[in-house]
Amino acid sequence: MTIHVSQRIDCLIECDKEPCCRSINIQKKSSPHDAQICEMLHNLVYNTSEKLLETNPSFDHVYLTSSKKDYNASCLFPRACKDPKALGLQSGKIPDSRLKASSEYPNFENHRARYARLRWDKCWVAYPSDTNQWLQIDFKYKAKITEILTQGRTDANQWVGSYTIAYSDDDVKFKTYKGDEGQDKVTAIYFSVPQLLGRL
Image (cartoon, rainbow, N blue to C red; front, side, top):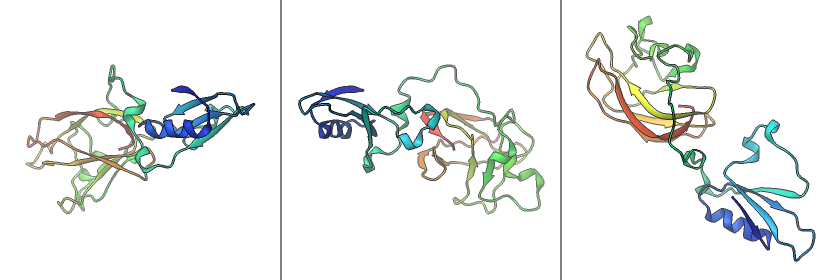
């Protein structure tokens, strides 16, 4: 969003009011009476590839460090997802090296984290069976998540009754989104989520 302001502070104030504004480009004044161009941005320069940046000596870049300006995927993708596709857990496009877990059932090769995939004859089994276990999938790039499909073990009456989804765009700060519940060991369970952007 671009506006015109009479003073630099006005640009900062307007950015602070805007939920998706995290930084500004403010035009330098050539004279005290000139209006300034104020560009309100949803991203931060230090999170952007240098290949995409262009220096403009007529502008200064300022970013806000307000706690309310946490990462907000809805600011980046306000439109509905079109033509969604599977990201590769079932097909194997996501390699084994990108699946990690808090634990694996000991002495059973068929229960490793790398088998946490849909419609396989092997599966991930955590040990011990408690609420402290987690599975992490790293897409290695930012991906829009609009649906999540989970499935219980096909050769035994074992499944996860409920779970919490945590997602991140930097692998350090995670946000949580509570998942669905299901008790069907064979049928895969779908549920829709808001467009989460990150690396689960």
